[in-house]
Length: 425
Image (cartoon, rainbow, N blue to C red):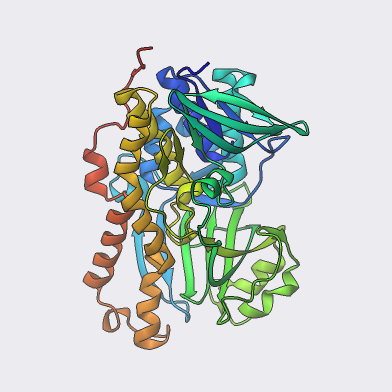
């Protein structure tokens, strides 16, 4: 029997946020997650103000977010010689009505999971269950679910695929899609206990567009002044076909890559020393997928990385997944749990977010380092003589507008879902 139930494939940040949204507006759902156990995986990510606003509207409080991260105060780019290229305040300090948060990805994931279970019940998320495909019917959709070594089917009004960059649902929707795109950049990621730099919560991008570090704290300082610092070390290789490893996020020894960053030593930061103190390190290629013309196939929709896996250069992959969930909820509140709601979601987000995917592929906000490299090789005495302040500010403003978190636009926007909204069923 088909009803208004939503089948959600995947229990990551995207799928859990959609579950919280549907529970909030009174839509029945089940999340099917392939992992047999939820664990706090990953390292640091950023949540932009447009996403934090949505979490607040879901009843996730600042106190709860403070337990998994901290508000970001500054975003800064630094040249290869250690001198500042561009810096600006972030979150409340920049004039947003909502903060930006730097968080531990795994701890945020567990916060969303625990909150959903406490609100909707343990049966809201089915672990060890992977949605592997679907068939459509005039009344809804039938999903094939693999669990406990066997397949069974689930019926619902719609299926939303939040099953990541390797999405089985996207593969069925686009069987001839190109393989995952890798442009040649390799990232080594990890955390270290150290003192924050510049401010108590600065995001620092250091180096060039082909050879750089990204460093920011994801916890408040302890009594000794140190915090958990997230770091990303990145090198772009000339041979974009050289990635031969099977895994996408594998543990790695520091000695395998530290030689790339031996010269990153400044009076305010010794990168090799920081890396040697790291408590973990993982390697993965910087990957995304080519945009598709639509995220919807009738009663089936893609969201999150299944829809728009993107380079992390703009720090907005998780943020966009959260926004996806809220827009889907808003369209269901307006149109019911229907194909029409999914089509409206697709019409609002697919084209502009696909453009953002390509913009991030072109270095996103780190594009300033491209300009710096073109004009002076990353080494300068006075940044004003290389990239004037107005040009730097205009570059960043255009990126924020494309990513959906321009200050004036976001602050003036009505809530995505009206407070207290419930779908009449």
